[in-house]
Image 1: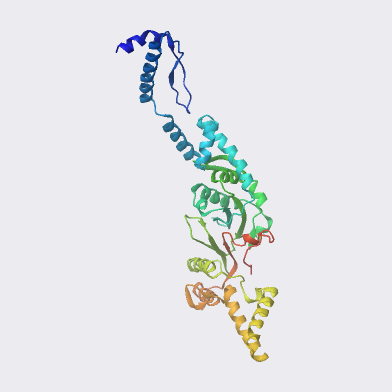
Image 2: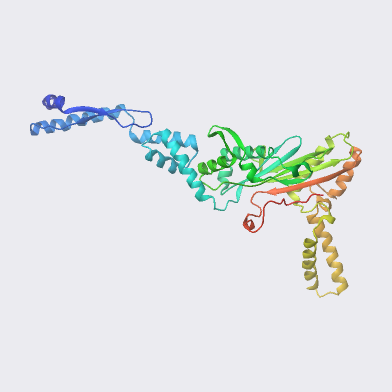
Length: 391
């Protein structure tokens, strides 16, 4: 007590206050001492009293570490950026959360540009459909962790919807047509997600999501299939985290001669055939549609295998023809065993459907696409052609 009374006079002259350091929107004041010691006792008294003041101040204000963790958490929730990047931006901006958010976007866009050359084999397919056509896009990323992110999935669905808006003269003809990526990337769109919103272009939205995810994100390809008239479009998405998204897609059009026929049976079989496409991986619609190059290559392989048996030339030819029939059953849609009933092939299935609806039914076009297929050789081959053939 005596010591405190001794310190009372000098302290009143020595202590002043100054504004504290800003942490986001919180402010505090701290005592600042200008030590003017008249004796050794004054010096000792000052140190004691200042320690008491400091402890009292700290008990009323959260410690700096707690404030920092709170700001890191808030900014992380706003942006979904990696924690190390969030903290770096906050430190750079003196823990001003608004300035740090702006800094993060700048950092992210530069980082996204640097990562644009990295291989991205993961991602999702997104499907959008209206009465006249269906659009599928492939949005790639580097890891399945990002593919499961809600922002990435929101962007993929948004891009599929935008692909429906891209007008192309070729789309007026029934079939499968590639979406012009340059035209799509220049389209304006309005994003309405809590973490990514506002008016922007498709390309800028992709760059911003890449910045948030910390990975290379790119729109790889897109296709549109027009609906026949009369007829229907059927679709199926495999490994679907939510409606409209998946890793494998099957689409096909069923054409019917009589437009007045009931469509329920057509829709049922169409849905089953879309599943069949995903499971059976057909490359051609009919035997006549098999390319001469593919057929000749397969014939040479089968002939070489047959000759190794040492049998006669006549026997070899019979073996080759028998194995070619097996090849057709593997790659030609109409010759494949129906995956939901392997006692019949797809050709028989359509024949039965035609009898059921009272009008001839045929597959107009089909299309199958899988995330990441062909990326390893994509630099040498164009990815603009679908892995399917129109009738």
